[in-house]
Length: 152
Image (cartoon, rainbow, N blue to C red; front, side, top):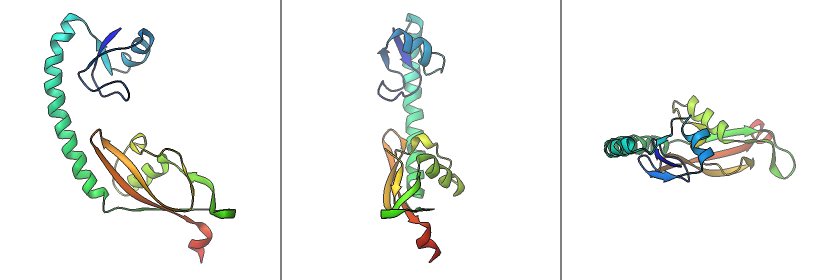
């Protein structure tokens, strides 16, 4: 099945691309979520307008993302968690925790944009990438401290 993407889809394509996908993926995921539309002759005529609009929208989003990166570069997050032997955490610091802390500081960033490969389970300093746009990524310093160290 051929579809025209209305939004960027990871590992598939960008807005305005005509891609060939499995029938089930197109019918059950892309079309109901309004991420794509069927590639009919009439829709292919509309694609040129969509591409021009997508370029303008992408440029605007990239500018906003770059401005947000400048604000995020001045920020650092600190998490205090209980620790056990060998400074191993009870629990972990996840992308949802990082997104929640950013929201508390006034930045509305979706947890799916926090590119944390696996939750942080050690005490230390980490640089966590936050993908704000496909070409713009911020790196936020995250410090995880043990609760005993904070009490002393």
